[in-house]
Length: 90
Image (cartoon, rainbow, N blue to C red; front, side, top):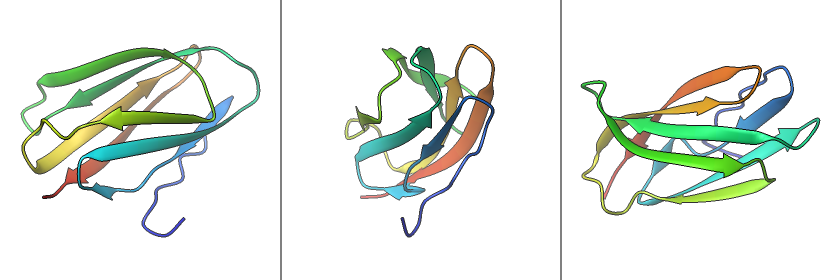
């Protein structure tokens, strides 16, 4: 996927576009089902959104209410944590 960031990890991996305009789809590959916690932080390190979810192949997130800027997406599973930058543009 052009403009995406592949995040290889132990039991799951995630792909997503780094630059978005409001809707963010996360695409997961995983060895076994489980639960994850997805958190979004602004540049000041403040948590602005939080989603506890069951792991699925595709997870849509709506960020359209947030102002444009740089955010950090933190994905926590039972055995790993991944943090990646996301740029929200209008």
